[in-house]
Length: 223
Image (cartoon, rainbow, N blue to C red):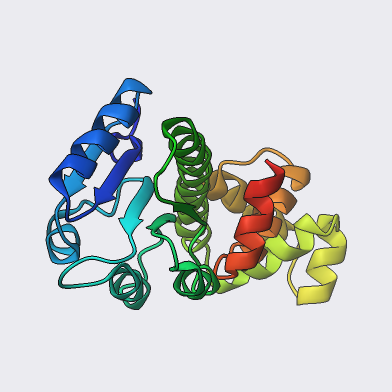
């Protein structure tokens, strides 16, 4: 069954109702689910940040500016791709937003086809990232059910060591290692040292450089 929290949602934050309606129409026509907010405070208070997708954010608004909304997202450690919409003469501010981790910015007036292209790319990226994050969390939860000794043995098994060698290294009987091996494979739902090695490698690399906005932009431009 598909996790309902993994259904992408496109957020639009703009103080002009006509702009919100236009964005909703264009994106709904392209098949996206859209939620509109008239200001940053409303967005921050009501949005379901557990859902993947992206945020289309006006740079200059009454009340909280787009940059202030972005700063609050960063402060809350909310990982949501942001597309800034800027007016003429706001390029310098947009550059600041990109350095803080925004994925892209579009200059007004925004072409519908360009908006759809950006949203499609970001929602696809974020959905894949959220899916992988959930998989890694599940792997971590399963790995954490291992005892400290089982984690030691798991590392040796993943390195391709046989039971006799592992026992000698850890000062344990070979039969004890066999029992640990069986428990490890059962807890992690693996059937071979190769599968176990892949899990350990995934967990070792679960912390990535996602805060590098320039890296994000490079990746998106190459997609």
